[in-house]
Amino acid sequence: MPRIAIIPGDGVGPEIIEAVLPVLEAASDKHGIPLELKFYEAGDLTKERRGAALPSDTFEGVRKADATLMVAIGETAREVILPLRQKLDLYVNLRPAKSYPVPNAVQGFHVTIVRENTEGLYVRAGWSSEYAALDLRVITRHGSERIARFGYRYAKENGLSRVYVVHKANVLRGCQLFREVCHRIAEEEGFEYREMYVDAAAMRLAMDRPFDLIITTNMFGDILADLAAAYIGGLGMYPSGNIGEDNAIFEPVHGTAPDIAGKGIANPMATILSAAMMFRWLGFVRVADDIERAVWKACEMGYTTPDVGGKMRAREVGNKILELLSSSNHKDV
Ligand code: IPM
Ligand code: MG
Image (cartoon, rainbow, N blue to C red):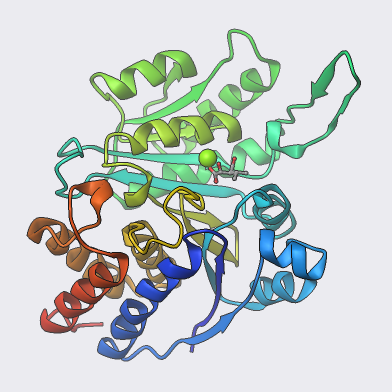
């Protein structure tokens, strides 16, 4: 029985989890995959109450679970998601930006960002004084190899051929190493090596999108992912996975949305699609396909929240997706 840790977090997190849990349960019932769900706390309120944004029982719960579904962490995100990524060595940040049929998405947009998730500018080593500050950017051969390997293999498994390595090797030493390593891995994995500078890639992402998949370093991936979100209807539609060798945390790309927190109108689809990614990673491919189909159908029917043109509340969207899931006959596991 898959053991799943759930972290609702701050802001819209708890109301999104309320809308998403019934969908998770319906999917697991329908496909006969009982889940063991355990809830953990993390984030701003946890820090206020317990003095730590990521208490050790939460860390241990995530470490021992087969996978984790987390929603959003507020001001303390840095103290929660960054140590989880680094200590659990979740070196891949997989961000498939695929448009669903909502009016504010560019139809047919499908670019997957494979972002290195443990090093780069996120090592948070540096120094600062009143006059200057320094952030170290660490790029290692090992880190570059494994992210490139993951990216090309993922592309192969998913029939994505136009794979670009995105860097800034005309300026940065780390990117020169990254590029050299990625070039070799591309050849080993049987891909034509293609590359682009990150500034040009940002423009091309907005223009003609010559890529199916981008392999890039940590901060570049962070920025390009939010740009990609603009083409799929916004962050409310964007799922992600922080993936390591034997552990993974799935989370929507969005944050706590303090402007709408408590109103019940936050879009639960990014979290539902993250749950689908989680099922896929756990090996329950048909459950994942089934959830994604139900979300697609809900979008077609206009069962959506206001950020993507609808009028429904998060819980109503969750209930509609649950109904679509329960009434469709894709039961084959
Ligand atoms: C993301 C977020 C995080 C990041 C923040 C909250 C630390 O922007 O997951 O993209 O920069 O990685
Ligand atoms: Mg980000």
